[in-house]
Amino acid sequence: MPETSSLPPLERLNDNKPIISPSENWFDSGLTFNSAATYIPGDSSLLELLTGRPAAEDPEGCVALHYRARPKEDPGFIFTRSFIGLSIHTPHLDLIRRLDEPVLFPDPVSEDALDDLGCEAPRVSFVDGTFWMVYCGSHQIDKETWRGSLLAARSDDLINWTKVGLLQGTDDVPNRTSFHGFDNRYFDNLGGLQGDCSRVNNKDGVLFPARILEKVMLLHRPMIGKLG
Image 1 (cartoon, rainbow, N blue to C red):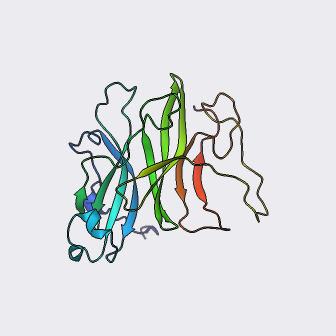
Image 2: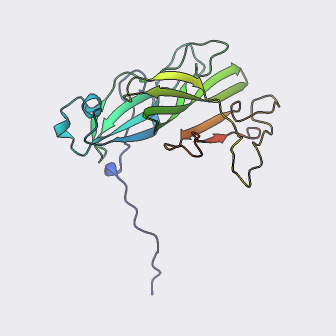
Image 3: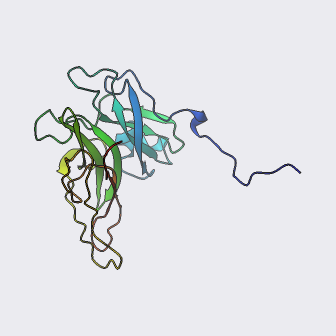
């Protein structure tokens, strides 16, 4: 008898096409990737603002995608910077609206900047009545040294964002029976310095939407060890 697979059949959504692809907009003409998805229910006061049409047309609500975008060309920079764009979709991922300008820009270049070379990998959570975006700020310290920092921005409507800067955290979490502290070994591109949970090369951060032990918890990916 022929062998039968126990794996379920694979179904590719959206007609096997990307949900977001590069467009003719200046900031996302090169690459679009790493989207964060936020569902907005049909009875939300934000629905019409996000979709740009009467709420009656979207009784199931909508999905806001905040995506990382890079242009084909970015004169004056060592590589094309990353911006955060926004598109609005039905819950079935049909496109309703796509903004032609980023909702989050890199800061101007400076010695103290943390995201002058890009805003990467957005993750959006609704915490204590506010939308919070955690993203990786990219900064070139010198020709050989790159730093990625976990930064945050806040919004009431998913369109207008206010940056709040570096996420300052603690690894001192009470009531943990098997917690051994933060691993502060050599972090790549930090010159052999030790780090802590607020000062490491760090990416892929997301806030838990509900407090735990009365604290806001962050899931993140410290980059430990040398590159290569």
